Length: 336
Image (tube, rainbow, N blue to C red):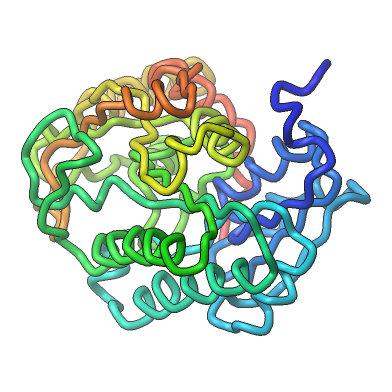
């Protein structure tokens, strides 16, 4: 099959956080689309080697095990690179509230290290993961890029600062940067274990273990759940777009439709019950609201549609079905 993104062919690409959920899916797409060289930089604090199983069999792929807080490692990784995808970060609002110092060190100092290494290496474009958390306390729906709110967590602050640094580095040093504000990304390889697992893998793991998942709040909170393949496509578009107006700005990357947590539970349960009928009888438990959470999140994706040509191929329900199949087949793969 002919690659969809011909302009990736022949390029040398660095993906930080390459062993992570989004990073590893992106690496597979880069290799499939003809990249000449793909380098992953990861310290495996949250990434997993099994996520790179396919890439490690490809001679075009190189793995550098190092930390983005190490500037020399960032410089080594950026050497000879045309395009950087910066996915490395410590995610999770609760984690940042529990440990704001480490979140800040990784997400801000590490981000600046990688940007600076890119400038010094002559990298032309830097595409980075921002977050819907930058909208903070704003209650306006749908979320429009130009109208952000008060950040509600240290994690959200780090993503706001990343966007400021990206703009400043373009102004000072000329590197083109594109920020992608991810909205609740989910799909294959997202780790269901640990204290800071995202809601969908958390629900999946509980249901497959025949336990009741805990919904924070009364279940009416809603999110714009976005299947990982849409996010990978947005990254490829951001890395190859030639329109100067599309550069040095940030975009909402989402599906453009909200799902409440109660509906999410019902949909995931329905999909998993196709493989394990015992799941059908499980009911959720309800817990307190989580600090730093916003009630509702829904993206306006028209800017990405217009300037990047972004068209999310997978709606949330299709993504839930695909994710349920993957988690059922890989139920033991992420056991800790």
